[in-house]
Image (cartoon, rainbow, N blue to C red; front, side, top):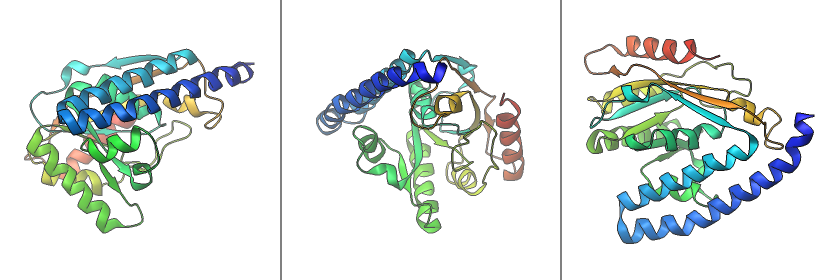
Length: 243
């Protein structure tokens, strides 16, 4: 019955989703080209406010735990499990004060209004998963960027989304490079719960009545700690809180 009800609601949701992206694409362009980074960043924040608000049509609720533990004025490496595309807008909106930037697959850099523009101009990097040399170079660039600008890099070390909520093995290389080239950064483990249920039936229809929970764990100062210990503590924190 829930799936049947979801069909008409999903049509309305995707219509709102498309309109939101179409409206904010020229807004982003104007902000970036005429007013610079801060204006563009605010336009992206507002875009993601509406993307989150649109999901409330589907009965989606949100809870963010421990956001007060986030350090300010230092680079941050956000390490999170990955359950669906809804993870992105959730992080951008609810963690907007730390300027999150993403390590995204290169395919997202073209053809998607608003989203592709932000990935190309907002400080994120695009990686080719078939070209390890390019990918590692881009991640190093991201690390140097957050070190210089005191912003945040978001990495999903599982690589691909979990369709059932069960975490996949965390890859080490991306996080290792971020820690090496952003030496003053704090690593912040983040657990995302229930966003996979939004895509339980695939892209259409969208899951109804879900409560997406973002749990922010105690930051770990990377400097002076062996990477193996950083990796172990981070994975344990993220995976240990998956429902």
